Length: 317
Image (tube, rainbow, N blue to C red; front, top):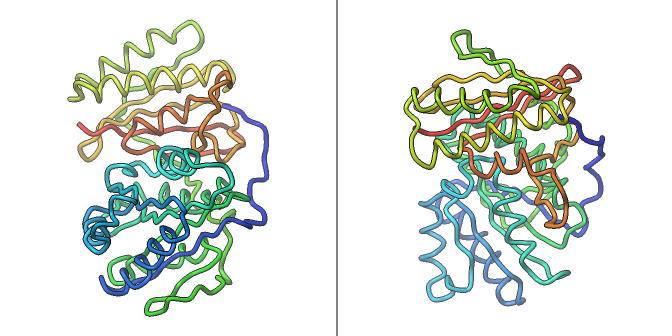
């Protein structure tokens, strides 16, 4: 899987991306409510995508004004962190009139996110800065300092150019801001699974690879829409490998913590770090493979190296 090398990070203006550190519900509301109400008063489109409990907190605090805000439960809309930029943030921002500032509260990291999910979460927070560079938007990202581990809070300083400390309502610059370093640091090799089904494929065996994937997923307990989604993801990833990744690849499948996992590895170099995380123009041919997988899978992890690309996706049974 290859793409042109890009340099996505640079000056963010007029994009604003602060992290909010909060200790309790009151600190949460002390910042989020003025953020939402000031946006509504200015005629700016406002969206809130946060976990269900905090979503209910904001909805109740807004009262009658809640109808003017797009409210989304991030546990559903952003279950897969790779889906959040194209399917939540950009989907909302791109639907607004050109040039109008949009305000979004996005809380993609909460206590209970697994160690498997977290690298995709923190890379997402770093890549927001690239995906929205130069756009007229403000995205406020809350972090629960009482329940999240210290390394998560440290990463928040690295992925946000400004922060709002606990107990404050004022932004201050983050001296640790280094989103490109975060993307590289969490580009972790995905550990091999010794007992996984393994099926090498090339251009002559794409159809058999898909049949093998569907049959194995069904044997492992995947049914209905999830089975259809896995079939589609497998078709997209194996085709990408043949077309862009050197003409061949290896399909692997196994179960893990209640998920059926599908992995495709090839020798292509995926240089574009926003691949699969940006919407594709309707008139563009191709370029939707990893994006589509992000939109339908419960989790997607990608490892890039000069020796190849591995895409691993999880589907809940």
